[in-house]
Image 1 (tube, helix red, strand yellow):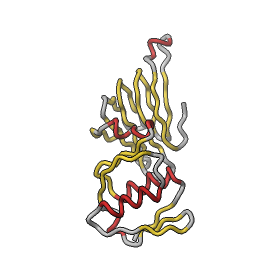
Image 2 (cartoon, helix red, strand yellow):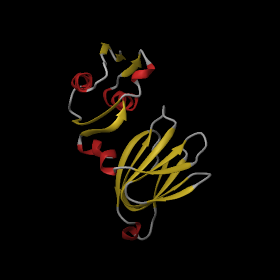
Image 3 (cartoon, rainbow, N blue to C red):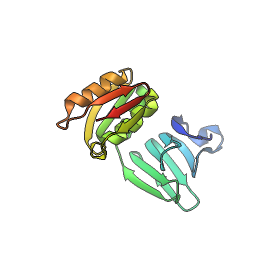
Length: 174
């Protein structure tokens, strides 16, 4: 399978159940060899890294420069410019909550949150001040919530004063 860009969640049976034929996923600068597992791949065009999160089982990640084996709750991060692989521990269930129609933000910056909301709601965010980008939030929300309701929760939940102004498909963060 080739993931040109975007995000995909996959559950794959062990290769032994199909006569030992390996299942591979190609995502830009990396190749994933699947050994029977559940995992998520984020490979968005406008982002500098590819993130692969292992929920269960085992996978191998390959680039031109590196090779890593992931265990559950590992997230591999491949930098598109140098093809190196870094691995960090994450809560894999939070990373794949979108599959079940849930948005989970755990101490994420407003910049990270707006990047996700931008993809989900087909809007662009513009920050009037860069100091707002590093404000962190935690929340668990239904994906069926409107963008207006989500942003209203952000406005009223933080200690920092944040306002959102809507102009067609652009949201200005004030």
